[in-house]
Amino acid sequence: MKNKSIVEKIGLIGLLITAITSPCCFPLFGVILSAFGIGSFELFGESTMYIFLAFSALAFTGSVFSYLYHKKLLPILIAFISVFFVFYNYFSSNEGNDLTNLGMIGLMIAGIINYYETKIFNLMKNKAVILQSTITCPHCGHKKEETMPTDACQYFYECENCKKQLKPKQGDCCVYCSYGTVPCPPIQENKNCC
Image (cartoon, rainbow, N blue to C red; front, side):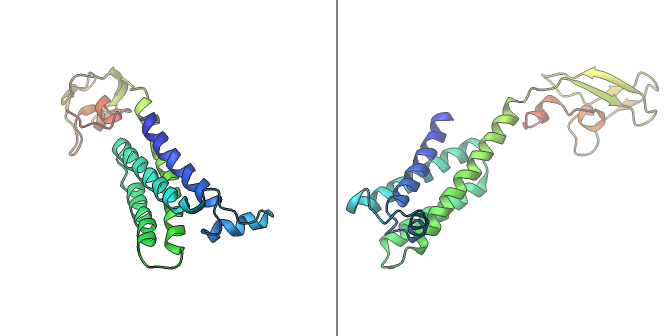
């Protein structure tokens, strides 16, 4: 995944550099640079727009890789609409750069969302699975700490105090998800339970 996120970072950084170095094409950055006393210049010459389109496509490709990793739909939708705006504005007879600027901002937003979604996904993925859960009997209130199985779900559990047999509640996969302090290992790992 590291190489795939690098693709998106290169695309977004390249997109930003291309836009900043050509504020005459992108008034949004022209205003910002003028505020710092830097006039309009064009680092890449006549090929600026082709380089901008290439970096936009690269940023979108990185968003696709991120989607395949964390499966979050919002950032890929924002990136798709944004890259569509950039390419549509370039290949249409539209004189202004409003759609291009909007597309560039959208790609930046998608990149930021993807960064945080990937970070959250990695934290969840690397989180250690807890195997100890304290089951509380709904009939007598007796509590006992048990070690959950990792290779099978436990559908039935007999309370050692009142001897009643516990079954999972409607919608739960096992007794630990229904009556335990910690859900079963597959649920902790966001997998289908048994």
